[in-house]
Length: 343
Image (cartoon, rainbow, N blue to C red; front, side, top):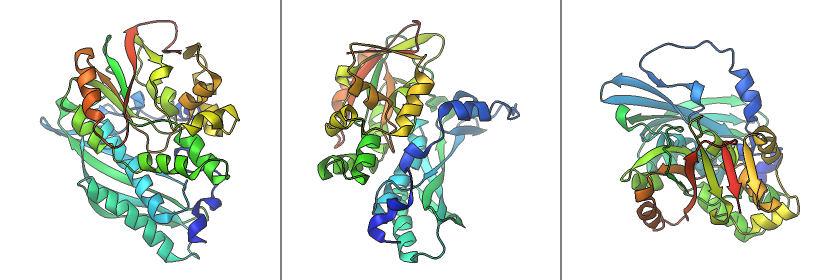
């Protein structure tokens, strides 16, 4: 395997490789329910991680994530995959404690390549303040890497993905367009500058944004990955409210607009559109912007539902970070659709 061509062994990489939401919901429909009062968050709400109460003042968060490469550099791939897996702990309001590697790799290839992947992942666990304890590997022609991560949180500090309150503002902590840019760059259709913008976001831990957000009145939180901005925003909605999005305020990698106009989009984005077509309405939104909102993200930013009185101050403080944030919407009284997007 040519170390410079790691993602040539994959048909799609990163969170674009996720199974579509509709298939997953059907697949888990008949899984037995577990009626344990200490299971505070399970898979029934499509939240970012499972939370199990250990005692009154301590709960454990468990999550895992892995995928094929979306970049050629093994070391960079390791960093991005680990950053993506660690993100779920922050989306649940917790702190990273331990991690285990999940590895699929061809046994007849250079172990130095695998070593570079693992080194990148280990460095991100270390940056997160956690401890890498080992892992599991299997022989596979298509490389895949990720982490199983354990974190901790106080039960009364859990960040659920669906506890928004009417009047809350919605903030996004990384620009969109990563899926289109990385896929187009692989095909020689996107610039190096745009690719580097995508990489900067993908390898930035959401730890820093959440540490700031935790000082404010946050009612709900999730992160943006393979289901795209609209897919993960949809998971924040309940029957009690809808969310209005001002598409003019949504930040994205500038070249993503051209890619969308030229239909250099991903299959994952179209799966997201299909699943959400009855749940989202658009008014005066350009087709290119729609594609950006459906675009699968790898290691995307956080979506934060924050009390209106705290929103401006939170955005100002988030703006001190190297990756840009934006205020994109508002939680409103229930309407016909879950999400109303206007331009």
